[in-house]
Image (cartoon, rainbow, N blue to C red; front, side):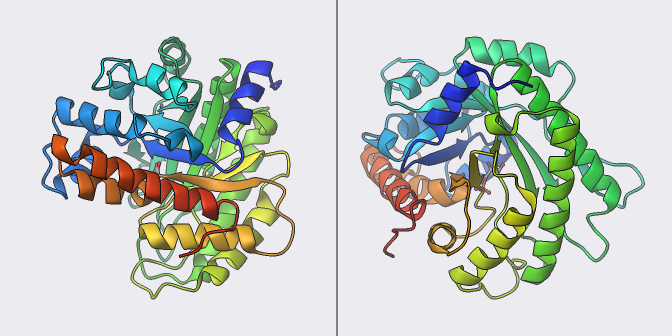
Length: 334
Ligand code: 13P
């Protein structure tokens, strides 16, 4: 695949200095869970009002270069009646779209999953592009257990991630490739490193097989961290393991690595990103964020679904985005 001028322009905007990506692309069941945690009902109007609040936060374009949306949001309007993709563009933010259709079980693997959504993807992309989307996201997940993920789950997910990325680039859009090794469990950081290395190796082998232009994609990986039930390590330890794995597996041709937060607290996700950027040694890529929970939890907590709290929620969003933008340059002061 050739890197087109269109893809190049999108990459340049997404990787602009001092900024990162907001993932606001929660599917209906996920956003329901997130909003209900703060007593907010997940109605279509509440989802619209919430995502309008995010996009219209004054000054947010200084720290956020792109926002990933769920299909529904691309067709919605802000409180003042502007289309959400247009409001993004006006704020200097590139609108993107999550295009996978979630997980399905791989038979006979004891519950391992593969991500679906390739059928008809090219046609769907044409529609999203007409609505203003310039980049896309596809997420694969890998659960760590004693003998998991197995070779089949890794190979199957790597293959569909690569097919997805090739189809997206064929439409002149930029794919975010997201292979997420989950934090659930009691495994140590070394085990997360081994699994992440195996997954990234398979993903880049598949991307090559499908001729994906590495210069025209963004990688969205997990940081290398121990399982959730273990004590949290110092950020420098996370940085050390994460960079070792990425240096072994991610070609320098990839312009940007934008981490997911994966259930880390907002503070933890920021401190770890900061440590990754402060660490010594070669770092040939932009190392930034593409957080959902770590950017949005404080916003939802401040908003509580009430119009009178919009300003406070926007302040919380701007504050968290500013801290992560600092961490993206290794100059975060907790
Ligand atoms: P978290 O930052 O909450 O892990 O979400 C990132 C994401 O987009 C998952 O697909």
